[in-house]
Image 1: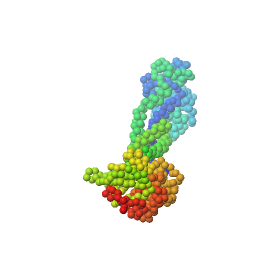
Image 2: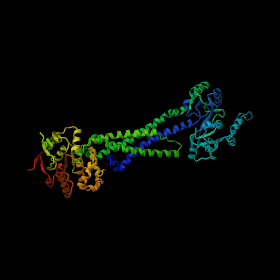
Image 3: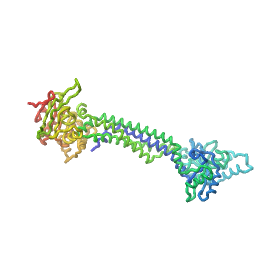
Image 4: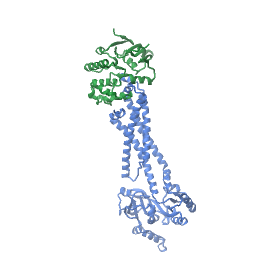
Length: 399
Length: 226
């Protein structure tokens, strides 16, 4: 036997479709906006966590600003000191310099590292096309000689000098390469220099753009090629992260944070954005369910005769209420399907046409499902209660 | 006092509409007894309270005074008890058929069984549809049936759960004379063959001619046709 709620939905196809789309838009907004906030921020966290390191040394007092801090902050020699001071606990100390530059028309955070530290920074990520910058370290050695030798003092290398020795080379990740339509051998103009892309790495490494440490130190720092932004510490096997962190911090007088805390720092730093997203989601859901409630209420008003017929057959309050609530749940289920389909389309479009990431997680799908179910029941109950008040004798006699 | 032969008794029924100066009593201490297996017709001019009486007998409306006794038991005022009696014992046929427009003919019948917590035992629905000549429209929705077919489906729905009492409110009021005659013949046949008790309200003298007993409503009271 056909279900009455389903038959009603199928009989009023356009109205049902519009209602389901209205609910679907609310669900899509919840899943997409939350997924966008989570995806974009936590993708940054995941990239930071992809570094084969346990601790990060940052300038004292700037631990809370790690997610935004860039430029000169520490002496890279501090890395050598830490390794020597804690030989049993620290296996590698990797100084990096972070900055930002425009590539493919968008600003990107750049990480600069010594070529020899590439394995730690990218956790041995392969170069999928081309090669790493300054692969044999000749540029770094040349720049060090030029800047540190007494006979070269006072004669700054020019951009042509840097280019000629392979200093203006970049490695970019595959998503940026696809988005900006860049490949190995292409050049980009940025920060008053012409850079050559020499390699492409799979997406997921610390930043989308990477360059030689010495270049970044020389061009974006103070000209002093011994300064860096932060130092990643790779612990030796068996070293306890918590006690090592405390010991290093006390010894060097700088802040030391866990790489694993970066995600929480990001979430904390961007807490207002999550609040904003939650408010927008709440409003979207409320609008979607007010829409559904209006639809159901109108439906009840239009269907007083049908409800009176059921009551004349002896239908009790529970049966009548269930007919309305079931219709609300069916509409909501349809809206969920539409909303998730819209979210999948939004996910595809955002990742296809931007460098943002939407993380459509089971958690948010679950949240959307719960919110939709709760909304469906809440928005059905009042129309359902109204339905039980129908005076069957009046309706069936005079309508 | 109740008579054990009576399936339904109404005693001292009062029903009024309006308040103050506009208050009009349509039923004034009305008494009625319906015997099991009887085909009873109630006639009377428009607005005299026939439908109001039928709704009270069918427990769809409440009187301001008086009692309704069904199967020897006074029906109380609680929704649950009234719903249960209506669900189990009564079938309605309305002038406007009152089929659910979104369901097919057979589903209209089946949902009434579902509401009543009944199953289609021994293919009764099919038998009734066959008896009333609506098998060919079983899968059609009301919008694709003729007026006569809709009313016959409504009769199937009213009888599917084997009610003790069938209440019919002007069932031929919207039918042409041929359809009307056919329906009345069918009701009479069902009454005679299966002993189905029927109380029918009608304006039609022809319709009344099929009845075992005719009551006239006047001034809020019922009078037996002499």
